[in-house]
Image (tube, rainbow, N blue to C red):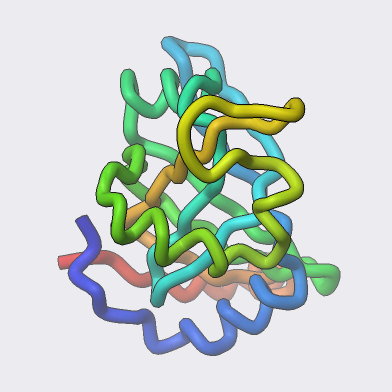
Length: 152
């Protein structure tokens, strides 16, 4: 679990994430990687992804909680979070997160009980980062290493 500290470069990373809110989440199932587009909510450096708890990504995370989330900027900069993922079970946190996403969850999820009207069951995956990187194509081309943060 992350120690709550934010990287020195987090303001720059957050600006990139806010400009490009759709990220790409990589999970694995055995030796097969899976990547899908996601639009997380954020609390500090923790990312949260709304999903139906019956999805393949939840099953993959339950078998292997190590994931990678990347937000790629138009200017060839990117933020990469290596994290441990888990299904959020705290009902208070689930309620708190309902309005934190950058889109209206009411359009896609049934907040409680059995899904109705073609909506998915509401669940959330929490990502606790243990490594965050910020880098650009320009820095890579000039041999400058990425900015890196690690949890203690």
